[in-house]
Image 1: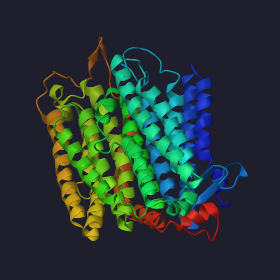
Image 2 (image 1 turned 30 degrees about the vertical axis):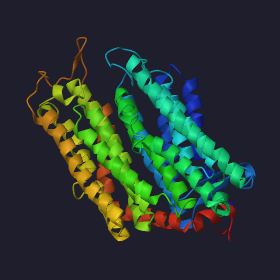
Image 3 (image 1 turned 135 degrees about the horizontal axis):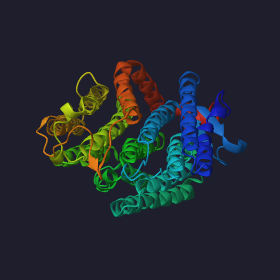
Image 4 (image 1 turned 180 degrees about the horizontal axis):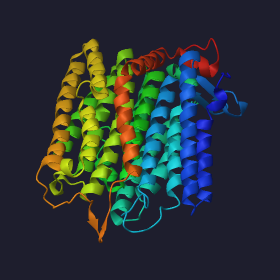
Length: 517
């Protein structure tokens, strides 16, 4: 089936891959790499915005790659959910890249070392963007797997930039965990193809009911485990707090914003399309509650801001999983809205932590203090998204959590109410965690004698500049705009949730009018 804007769909992947090749060929010419990277991401953002409007007004936009039929070739599809995810992921990637460019020298190492950025940095960022986008627009499970592997390869390069022993150790842990989840996913793919004769998601939705319930349950569980590892769902979340904080600020920011959400997206897509009457909904609710509580308890025990944010990242994955587990329209709408909110806010906070390191020389609150006086702008840039993360009214974090609580109350089950209680407690503890950082790093007595000129490193004082302040401020503003425009955005996420629950619009877009379950 050809749709009005189907020609734009593959551009979301082709553009960053072409850009990666061009930036690699331009190694040593930094200004060329920067121009190509920013131009590619801008073009992706425009395409995604056009496709969101088209998907909202005309229905999902589909491209049958090479003209092959769905059961013969790759299908790329952009519905409301995919378009929203591409827009927000491209937005934060552009902000992170701009922040990295604004550092002026190395994007991965001590800024006093005088080294130029590694030539592989820009290609890796663009390959990462291509991999993330591939997972969002894939219409079959094997192509989804390809997207996972693309972003895994790029993320390992980014995680180990600079080649320090600590980063390499963290990179090895990350790769081992990711490969384990990929092996589980690939094994599930083989079994699914053996049982149904296809890996196309629309065809699977039609055929999966024809196989035995025991087989369906096994395949469902394997997919959930594979995706849950990538999403850092408890008890498969222990790798994340040890992997992310070792990376430089821009890399950590894009990882925190995007990589776990790819796993969440995969869970949303398969849970609604393939397993709408899941026998594992209660298991997901338990996992959501445990992820919330274990993650936030870890966060309040941390002195380092990066580690604290890494644990809150794990904790708030539980909120998204809560909405998915409920399976209702209002639950899915709130979950999608919360995913958008969390990508923006978590990325912003990690970028602000990079500013804190530049001003104070550390992200350890035991070594920081009086930053509100030394750099008021950093204090403001931390405070706004921190309150948003904690869910203080009227920010988008509050609106998303209220939506999830309403969905839990509408479900009416005792387990749903238990998760609602856990979500309220988690929100309060999140407020405590960020307020603790706010008090110790920004208002307590300065223990290190920071002068406000930045950390002293080898006789050089690094200072904040517009190059890093503007992209960080831009993301803070986008987070506030998400609150201002919450009504229209929530309407779009609700329509996306309706389509997910109905499943019919997706099947008709891929297989043609009249396609039924």
